[in-house]
Length: 346
Image (cartoon, rainbow, N blue to C red; front, side):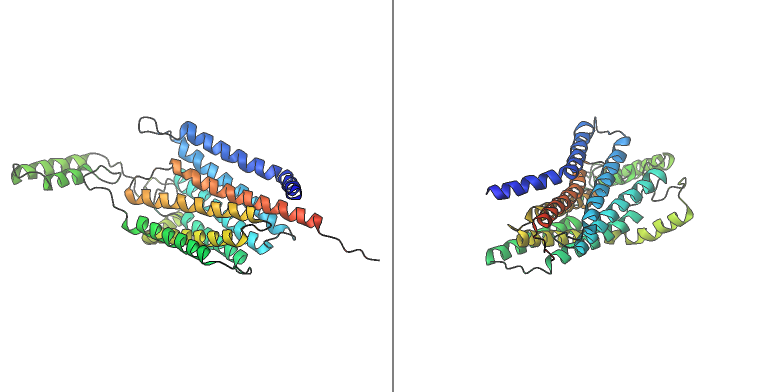
């Protein structure tokens, strides 16, 4: 027992800088959300979504560096190729966030799909490759209870993701949404009004509303505003990507469900092993990524998505858990390398 305690103390000392950076970034992010995340009188400062995006970029860049450090270590326990793939996944996610910032804040493009979604898709691919490389070479002997647990978690995650993406109830047509005009709302009310209102009166009211909407400027931004300063090639890319808007949610659903199932399998495979602590954090990171993406798909489908929402903290925590998992395995690998007996040559 004392031996295990000494090992953990040594590992924690080696993890000092990595834990300090990840923990400090997590505290900073939580503090920003607690102090400025709650909207005041239904409004939020314009700078807050940009700050949240920068916090996300910083978290994924920190994780990228920690994972890449493992990929360069020849004695890393899980294998260098595993961490190379995970580091690439973190880097592509950070690149997607940076692209999204430029897309919206610099060029003023507010389309539903951007080039960042392409990088997010690449991130899922590399994370899945890393997880598979970690689990496939290892024999996993599951008892019936563990098999049922993994299967149940996978089925629940897939069903929940499919319901949110395809079958979640849409907002009521009579409620005021971002994309609804006063003409749509009044015409809906006219169709559902009582029979005491004559058709002539209804026609007059709807005609007045149509005229009012025609005179008033529209508050709904177009996908590529005319005043956008984006180069022609960027506008062309944005136009091409708008054709696959309906498939983006499906990519997130498939990617998240695959990561969650593989993370649970890895958690069971490494449970109680030498470096199970690292993969516990990686499984938690995959779960946080799943939660954040499900919130995104649901709020976008409901028409209530606002950049800088409180649930976006799960993206930041996901990146930091990946980084902390990488730091733990790096410390354990270094400790085991020091304990390995060296061959004496005569």
